[in-house]
Image (tube, rainbow, N blue to C red; front, side, top):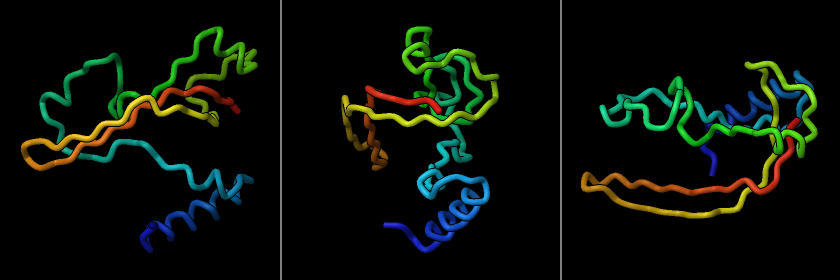
Length: 118
């Protein structure tokens, strides 16, 4: 359930989206950018390739020639351009664990099975 502050933010997003000619559904997209927090030494070590740390590892999609052909992409977009994707994914795994300090960690592994690039 949304809190009052969440409803206000969504309302602002909807108004802004309508100004840009987008639908209400587009306005409810959630920013996945990392929130500022103190990182442990373990977290700050690069494990999986280059990243500026702005977004969590695992949210990046890399599309090869075959994938781009299937999506009908003839001309590559310029780096930095924002594109819209719509995807369907299959839940491959779920896990939940509680650490010694009492913190709870949940994970859902998704495999994108269908997508559209716009």
